Image (tube, rainbow, N blue to C red; front, side):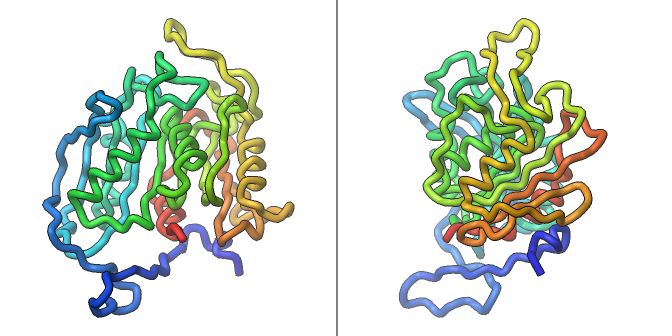
Length: 294
């Protein structure tokens, strides 16, 4: 039976590498770490990106003690909101408290993310390099399983999750964008197949479910972009992941591609009466944690 048919019951089956000359950990047990300084709690950090200080909030749950590798989730905020808003409203912090993973809440310049054709005021903002620098900083501080780095986000932040799948597939194992679609004008050439769990509201008034031109917020200097639509984005990733042409329905609200390359998965979940809203963080995490880099 396909793992997709048990989406809400997914359990990670993990294999962890150890340093040469050290005993292998018991099956399904994370590798040990030493020398890291990160402690449980929250802190605001910054990294230098092309001469500019970029900030993010790093959260380590109470269970984190640095003794074993844990996953890292990048959680990107929506347009005109902030890292603090995402921390307080996405629900990922509460899931991390139960599941024991680290979360980085990045802060976008202009409270936005540069996806290429939009959405920061300047097209020179390099948010992919920022994401890479942020992950490298967290890895240097904490005990991170670098095969289990994930990206999620809401609205423009969901677009940033897509952007990392397109441009940093060597870094992120899987992504879970919400309330956003792929953009026609955004180049996407991932270096490997990437598992995608997308959530969309059929009645979304901001990112049209069927695709088409965007409607920039009044007074905000945002270029018009063309959304591929929910099904169009799903089809794009079915192609990028070399999935078979057929699809299955893990639930009445979700559709999944069949037989994708390297065991990747491509899922679209739709709320029939949903608007411009985020997906349940626990369900997204259940999908993400089942994947790791080759």
